[in-house]
Each structure stands twice: as C-alpha cells, then as structure tokens.
Image (cartoon, rainbow, N blue to C red; front, side, top):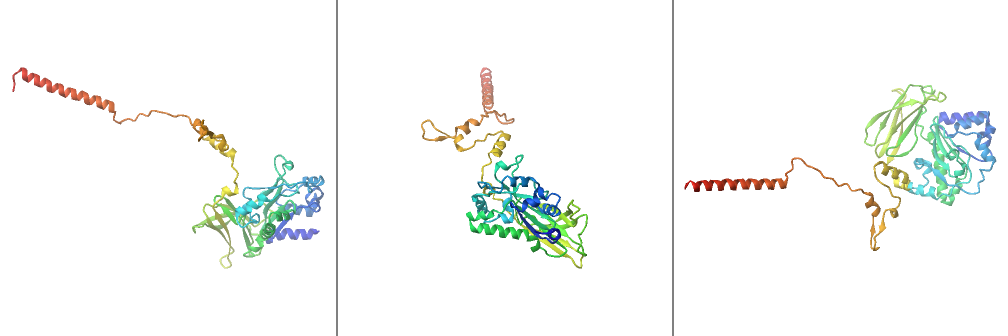
Length: 388
C-alpha cells in the first residue's frame, strides 16, 4: 500500500516525467479507492484523477452484488478504431488481430464505470446487455494522456484467458501494453520536453492528436500562448502546425493540436524547443495506410444501406432471396423484384432544328408537281401559238 507521499511522487512522475500507469481493477483493492469507501481520501482522489474513466460508488455497489463472479463469460465490444491502438494489435496482421479478438470468449468480471473523461479513448466495452445503464455498456478498456505520461484502465485482470485463443496473444498483449504505457519515457529526446502522438498508425482521413509537454531553460513548465511545429507529409511538403495550451491550469506547459492525414506514407511532426544556441528538435512519426474497411467491419450495414436507398429514391432488399424468383417452368431464375420496382419512364422529346422527313418528302413532291406543271403549260402555249 502506497502512502500519500508515494502517491504524489507517482502522479508527478507520470505527469511531468512521462511515466506510464496501467490500472487493473479487482474485487479487493479497487473498491477501497474507486468506490464510496474512498470518498474524501486524498490518495483515492489522486488515483481517480489518474484514471481515464470516471469512478464512483456505483462500482462498489456492483461488486457487493457479485458482479466480479459472473456465471458466464461475455465478449468485449471493441470500438471502431480499437485496432489502431498498438497494444490491441495482438496478431501479426490487422486481420489476424481482429480474428483473435472475435474468437476470444470474453471475461466474467468488470468494474462499473460508464463515463470516459474528456480526452480519454474508450477501446472496449463489457458485452453483457443487462449491465447497461441508460443504454450505455460499462467501459472495460480505456486510455488517456496525463500530462506527459499515459494511463490505461482495464476492468479486470482476466486477459490470461487469451491463452485459450493462443499463448502468443496473451504475451503480445501485455508486452505491448507495458510498452505503450512506457512509450513516453522511451521517446524522451530532451529534458526540455516530450512530443507525443495518440497513435503510431492511422488510416487515410483519420485525425491524429498531437501533445507536447515543454519546459523552459530552468526546467519549469513553458508557458506561451501557442507553439509552432512543422508537419512533413509523405511528399515532403512542410506545413505549420499550431499547438495551444490545454484549458487546464493544473497542467501548465502542456500543448495540444491535431491534423488530418490525407495520403499514405509517413507523416512527421517536428517541434523546435529552446533558443538558437541550444535548440532541440522533438519529432514523432505516424504511418498512414489505406483502410481495410471490409476486413475491419465485415458485417453488412443494412440500416445505412436502406437509408441510402430511400434518400435517393431507390429500394433496398435484404438478401438475394427477396429479389429473385424461379421462372414458371423452373428452368431459370428471374429478378422479378428488381424488374417490377423500376417504373416505366417513356417520354417524347422534341428536338428543334432537326429535319422532318415526312415534311421534306411532301415538299419535294409539291416542287416536282409545280415544275412539271410549268413545263407542261409552256409546251401547251407553244403548240397553240404554232411556235417552233
């Protein structure tokens, strides 16, 4: 058990020295600081501030009714971009990682927390629908930046069950989780500051968050209205990226910004710190690739497709059986549903200036008759006048 001084050192180490913390909930110790028992306790308040989720007494009540000992396992519901988080990539490829999580039977226990803190990223939810509150499932995995460091929350310590899917997945998960938490320490280029990106890999169109924790020459938090970084895209083009202080007076010297990735390749953020004589350039990179949407979300989105069809004046059928039928003699398959749904749109268009063949033929006949008539009249006059 840590005393007040050790808790304060832990908080400063994470926030100022880019440390990392992984909070794993359990049925014995967690209710002492995350539940109602910890209300008014200085140590408990500090640990609650570090957590990426809002913790309150609801968790303690669920523990008291035995939610840490469920009779059946419930799978985790991963967020849409969960596999972009490094420690969730437990396979060698994104496809293998997704299959491993889909094959994972799930966990039996969780600690009830439903609200992420501002800036936190919920990664996985506990899948039991009976545990939802106002339609919201409990958060099982969440992460956040805390100052210069990183904090991850895990609803229980049951990921040893990943061994049922593959021994290597369990080892990979915790190895990458610890590496992710300590990444701030590994990326410290200088004592003057640290530059962090919220992801190492991204897909085209995603937003990448940039976070910088800077200090002045006296190693005190650097307080400026804004700082300017350089963003180098895969083509080598350099643009300015403005980072502004976070609206939290308790964390001076912390600046944030964001940018969107628009092409594949490596994006690099460069942030110069210090004067010309002692300038240090902090840099971080993110790898951008083309999204494999069919692999990440293979389920057919019937509601979205139906809405798209209705908005554009079309019709949506669920499944091939609702569209095709057998012919009368049973020798072929006919798409009667599609054919009948297409309304006839016959129309007559008048094109001005185009020749009218019928009129042209009548006009030529009239001209021919007039010419023949004129010639016949001339011949008759010449005969009657006995002209040669």
